[in-house]
Image 1: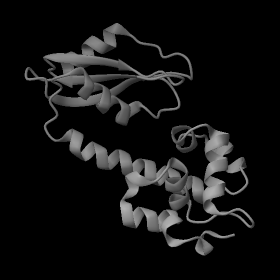
Image 2: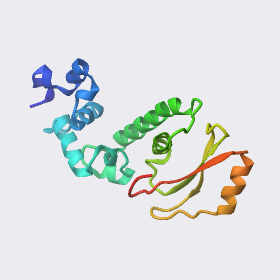
Image 3: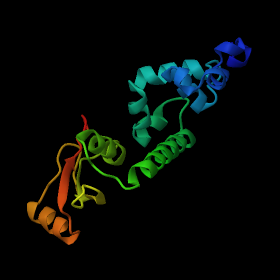
Image 4: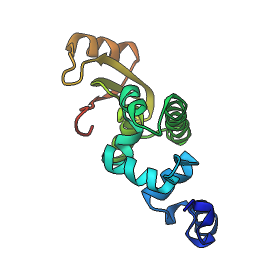
Length: 180
């Protein structure tokens, strides 16, 4: 049975409009995002299958192009759509973060880094250059690595900090298989 034949209160789109996006399950949100399913498989059933296969929303949205497009029901158009949505989210979140960012506590740094390099598919060593009030001067990825290693050269780190007239620096490194 297609979603259009369901009672209105159970349809993901109508549920979102009536109760807000936060009231939806991950599968329901993904179904709204996908828009439709496949022949014989409604969008919600497809979403549940995808979440089971990929393991989580994060893994779904960070899947490689090859892995994503191999799945029946997904393809290049949906891959491009997921990448565009991720970038829109990053930019939207960054708008709030970039306005006079003051790193007054570790949680702010963690949030900033999760949005900057948290979804990278390779290791990144990043420097956050701060002024004497701990306001962000610039964030710069200095070194890129592979899936499990990133070379770091202390001389370049120091030279870069001096070149930006940083009063303080935060050194950050993501771990592709774990967290920042």
